[in-house]
Image (cartoon, rainbow, N blue to C red; front, side, top):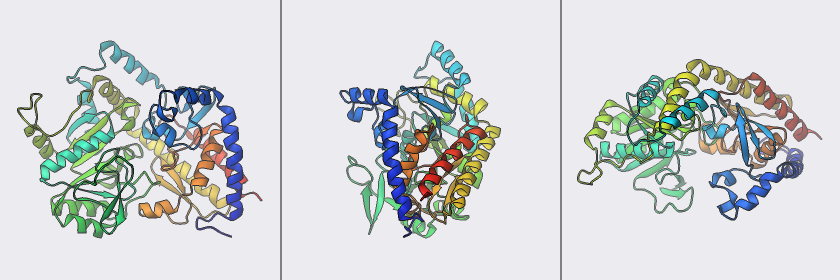
Length: 457
């Protein structure tokens, strides 16, 4: 009997059997990680210093010893070829010698000063080349970058509302952790959020009619979106969607904020350059510091003038836009970002890893087709992934229909036991700047072994 995802009952039974065996094998390989996890529970919830390190995995938490290039090694000596790339935070790879040099040199000078350092100019120039916007500010994460962009938008428009798209993820901020529950209701995507923000709306990606219905009320300060959704696999925009979105924002006086936190690593210039879009603001962060925390907000000159004219002071005598943080724009993050963007994440390197991403996607589709599986591979530049349906999704609802938790979790532990660290379940394997064609072939070789066993009788 076939399931809605094109997997037979026998294939599901194979997945259950493989999962049980591989889970046991995984635990046997990581005794030191298990011991550290048990000890850590005495001082940290779930035995980890950050909740995602436990919540995003259905296997015991692996404790890392060190890494080099595209590979990291756990405390038990097991090495993993990393195709999760730290959810875009380690896309440069591990222990890059040039970055290690820069970090050491800057540490000898000062990692933090609460005043500007010259590398900020180089970072601004590199971001301008990628995204076209002339003015930039810096935070310590993309979450705080999105928070600051929304505050600027509210001051600029005099409105409160934000429009988001289903399947989005823009960080752990109050305004974005909501889903559409229908009939005008919003459902929190996490606990501890309190009441839903005023005039917040969530509609389906690629639905311009829904966008117009919200924006025409003229209560929306900003549309915040990725140009390509990346937190529910990969959802590409229809041919007219992003340009139609730009036109609607202009028509109704709403600012368009493009979140390039993930997509800036898929192709050089992200979705802004690839689709030729002119946003009012761009946000980002993650791996442009090579793993050193950083967030970015790009804006038009008009918005930069607004920020300048709403500059607060430390006495409270002048009230400005709520921007900034003590460690934002610190010297270490900026000097690292300048070297990464100028020397290491060059246009040529972006094109190279985009080809590797295409090699991954082609290999996934070929492996499925050879076994009679009518699947598609997500693809956007260096980004890949699994769609267990014959048609790629146009929105988050369709994307989630192409997922299967048993398939994903079984694949991940099977790969880990064979030295490949696969992507978290909301994403897919991603080629990084430390990968080469041989690494992709290793991944696809393990996939062949996995699908052979899943499909065997």
